[in-house]
Length: 279
Image (cartoon, rainbow, N blue to C red; front, side, top):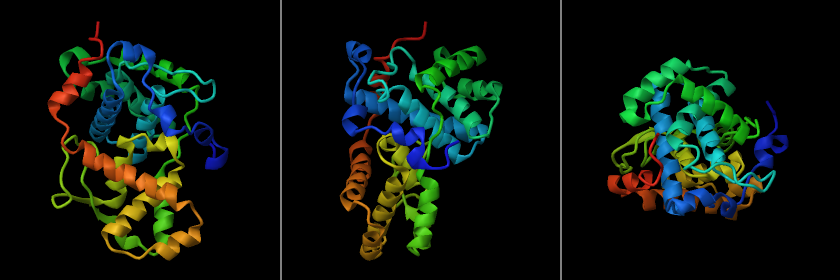
């Protein structure tokens, strides 16, 4: 695995927002809009989180799995081509298979049999995939990813940056959305560890496909410092990072909370109904 983000396949595959926000032509034919596309990916990120809780894997595995799932449906920057359509590769199978593959890549292997057991507990009967389905989709995902499995995450950078800024008290941060839970809650109700709350929520967006992980970590610190009324201006200036980028990422995170707090089950169901039924 690459030890340096700047020489990794992850860095080489970073995309612009405009490249990520592209719906595959085959999906467009089925009426899937950009809003549907984002909503379906968000719901699959939640699904991966729930499966991960059941099979008991590390948070890093969850983050890697979500990154794989999102990459499958994103343009391939290496060849300037589309990867896969949701109507072609059902996200209800891609999501658990991405978790299965990520567990291997992160050396936290999960037995396919155990994964299938929990899929059958969490899913409607027509989408209770078996081991054969998982293993076949695993090979398809590997091909769609061009066998690039290295993913860097904000967690390590976050820990180091908090220590450098002497802001370890920010590890307690009120958070609106618990990872793995589709219910949106107010910050007055739920307090989560910073690393398992705000940072995890960034995986409900496409940030990991667009920005270097340390900038995502800095955006989370920026949000936390504002909420906790911590003076960090001098520290950020010393880092010599582009604060416009950090603030833009922060605004995207906050906009996500505002725009998705009231998503109805009917809206979610309508998006899934545009996917083909399992034959």
